[in-house]
Image (cartoon, rainbow, N blue to C red; front, side):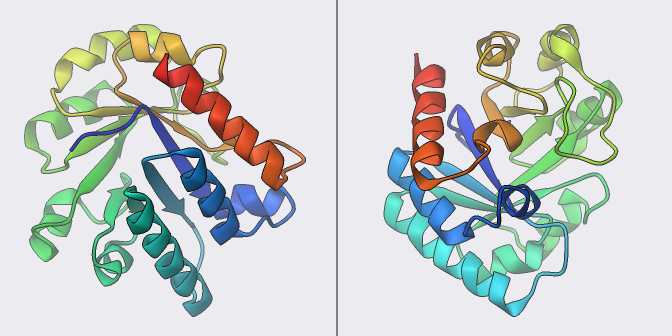
Length: 213
């Protein structure tokens, strides 16, 4: 599974904290700016309205030639037809997800050397995520920081695409790539505060330019 350098995450909690910015509009701005992958992350009840929104975002991603990834929910990814799923340590294990959906692209989160080494050896996931690389405010109870030195050392544990997440900023992003990450996932650092259509478009374009050069 090829991953672009920028991996934006549409996190409903973060958008709500930025004034309830519309999910569909946010997805449209990101896709118009040129993102090639987009994860929809929602930690609460997945309502009918949210599923309809996910359907609309799926159509928009398909039209833009981008891949949609659904966080946690294998069922939602399957219902959308062409979405991937990203699973965490407390979600359905990748092997069980693969059993349910043999063709489903799967990403899986790891947070330390043991988890990464185990998944690199035994997991059926198509790509792995590692983090938080630095201190992050996107989780209430984050795992310990990985840091650049560990990222550089642990990169050798897997040949699978590796997504770095957590506390990544424009100032340290290039160092994260140099340490071995294939892709950088963003939540808070992607969304300006206050959040407007213009500010989101500008921030996304800045990130794309930074990671392409």
